[in-house]
Image (cartoon, rainbow, N blue to C red; front, side, top):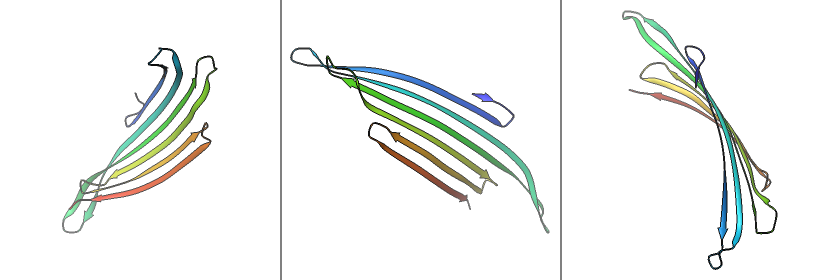
Length: 148
């Protein structure tokens, strides 16, 4: 986690892992299959927030003061999963090769306690090389909250 400026922060993470699963015969105890999986992922998240004090002049009532707050979040994530398996005496054969890349920007604006709004987007690409399948998700959400 880093705080770059007064209102700008940045955080990141990286992880990796692997596992090895061996299955043995319950009758004679010999190895039946061996499966290995490998996982890697990284993520970066940034946040920028600022406040703009202000007000509106209303005739007969004077100046109505309010403070608006805007936050901008951006999250980028990548996951990679691979795996292979074998039977005794045979070489390992790939059975999993998937990757996932996601970008999520979120913009929120709070005009006052009674009025809030924002924009959320999603860009996701998933690639399964082993199954030869790709999928893409594009999403945009605009929202507003008005309290009475």
